Image (cartoon, rainbow, N blue to C red; front, side, top):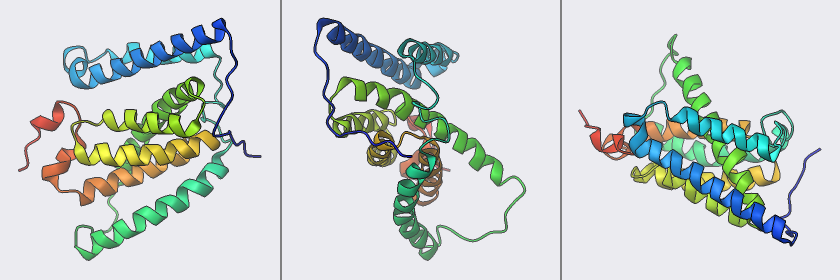
Length: 228
């Protein structure tokens, strides 16, 4: 059975609820600011700072009494999500594949022994991104604003901004982030979203000019990339 959320959700009134909203908003701002600081500064000066950010997110789950089901980490809603995400992905990726093969930017090659490992490794990273973007940030934003469409826009802007200054990734992740957020708001499950992001990421890496994509780098690393 699938669970659909209303686009407009009535919020209860009261000082206690308003205080909870303020604290949740501060929490989201602090953790998102910490992630941006890690991307731009801490990953070079304090490379282990990500563990404190991760601990803060886990503490938030405990405080808000989140469950694996509510976070979209179980098999619940998997099929309902996949029935939307997979056809949508095919509609976007098939033309890109056709373009890539037509321009000889993509070619058929025999599968190498180690070809699967990079995809699995990147797929795991995409699952982590979707967990943070949807399971954490989007769920918190949906508790702060009454419209699920507005929360989808906000989470898409946050997801895209985290990929600055890589223009191609900013545009792709903002647009893709909005579509994925809309799906997650109605069918909370991150696994089809992570798969779609992984395939899309490989296509972008293969089709985008190296001089623009900079090997998919974001933050300061974008400026240090040199095309050889």
